[in-house]
Image (cartoon, rainbow, N blue to C red; front, side, top):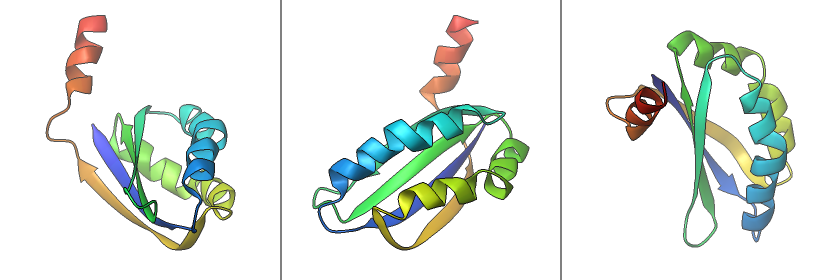
Length: 105
């Protein structure tokens, strides 16, 4: 499993709109992508920064998303973020999602 982390600077007072945009516009795009497993968003206590973490079955799935749909996601986020998103990719070392998926199988 692979993880993709996107860190963004939020516009002032944009926390609520960021959360709404993610849930209503971004998540549906992610859910349509091959290999997408789950997503998590974190917003700093002062609302100035957010981190989105998406989990992918395979590295190739994350890379394909990056080449294809990520530009559309960025367009949706321009109303709530400032600057350029910082993207990092990781191999997942441990996740309870693995165990949850195993039990459900």
